[in-house]
Image (cartoon, rainbow, N blue to C red):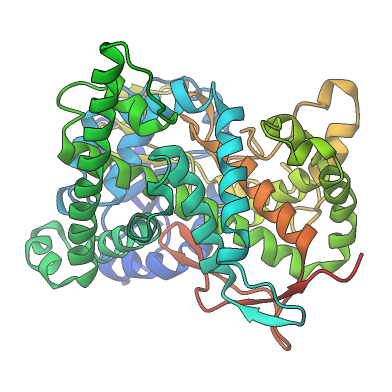
Length: 489
């Protein structure tokens, strides 16, 4: 254990060194692949004290959970989640720096998506109906499928319908961008973070992933140019009193509500890629994790199917303009399973994260220095017996029982509802603005898969291990499932 002085802040212990002789570069390198264990030991050692872990590119101040409520409503001008997210992807080399000065995409989610959630859930149903037999094999007998690619394509179609509308949501070029832009961005960022900033100038030109990013950004701008011209034409026609048919999309809302600087072709092309980066990858991994957790515990599939079959027996589901938001309220058990899957497999081990934008003094007098990244040990907190009973047990009905325990708990303990024991979507006023749609889509995809198919691991295979790159979690990309048209109950 070592101490570091950060400006006017008190001494924070640096955690992770195996001995006084271990060089810092080696500790940072070990964090890349062994972050989970390093953070766990730090959490157990310090618990109610601040400590520092060393990532390749930055020192992260890990805050005790006792500060979570205190920082819940801190404005972005003082502690910024967006700044933390964007810095992670090395924006000066991934071409995404302008997003630090724009909140247009966040406003679109908060002011357009959330109030119209029911309508946009209808879009997701439409795209699942369109793509179900197109993207998913329909074998009568057991067949191996790349479930991760299937889920990515389904999610990409759904979000594309919401972002850019028909017919672009069915354009294979746009779907390819939607799925692969986030992968290329992450590869580029993680590799760059392995090197000191002065080397980025040289390293970046050796990365195929960055060249693919550049190509995808160029293609996105070309597609946005066409869509923006169409939207402008519709506006002009309406101004002349003509009747036009135009789908509700987040792109159109942003064009109508953004500044001139935000709504250039270049900025819109980049912004749409950023929105796919924030939505498709995390939603797809979450859905896939749920499916793997179900296959690891097949005894729960019949229990979940009881409410799924009941929901699909509702005649209103297949009627036009079905209230999908109301329909999804039937899935109490599935939501509980989903929440437990999120606890075991969150997208990030250290969260929520913030960048300190202005000097911030905590109530106990500790000052957080400007420019530093601070984070909560969210994952390990939810595996603390003082937080959750029997935390190492995967209990699919954990939140279901809490919701049913009393009338006052009915609307609590939901997968998309941040709480001190559910930090996967963040916490407080900077929680993920798209969490309700992402959670709802996960239910829609998983429910339909269980309704239509039997699923299981390949013979001799078990639940794939979770991989970690720094504090980020991933699924083994080689992992597959077997499916067949449903036979069992």
